[in-house]
Length: 247
Image 1: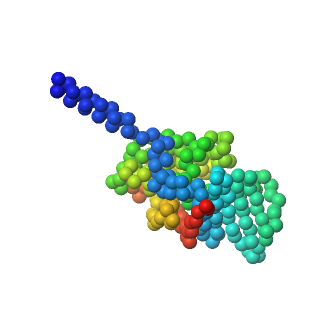
Image 2: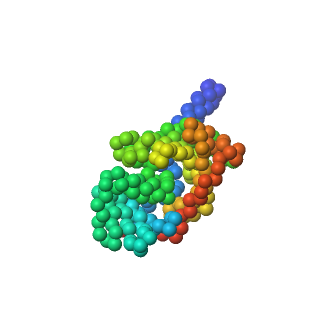
Image 3: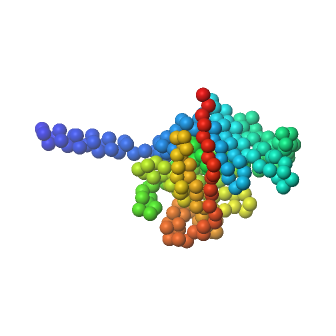
């Protein structure tokens, strides 16, 4: 009888362990939580990137993403992307833009804010997440999560694909890769560094590596990176970060 009871307990424990395996959505949610969680939803985040000033504001599901810059003549250009669409002003006056031009500017503004605030946004309705399995980079274990986007709600770059390496212990995004189709396309692999918390939200900079062979699967980039076969293309440095919250 004792043996039967012991075997039953072992069986229940084994089933319980199997049930604890996380799916892609749960992993992403945990990653968002350790990186800032609900703080993102009411945060005003400002920073400088490549001689331009950026600001995002979120509250009650409303958002506004901004980019501030000056042209060669000293005119102040402000781009704003919000729930209501995209606008550009010059010296506080609205500029009429062709749809294709407005779309290009909008994507550019959104892209910068997207990468700076990762992994926030990866639980959006248009985001498809697929857990490929686990792998290791530099002796650390990672979940590999492939991300794609629905055409409806996924923006004009919905065909781009992403792969995130999320640490199985910390749930932080330490590496990511993506393929894109604009400007003849490309593949990038990014290594996060210079991690810091600003008012409870995690920010990192990136070493940005390029892969010339556009047929290379994103899943292969971690091994090419460890083998030193990727070219360091640039560094993505975010400066003067400030975070505040609306009441």
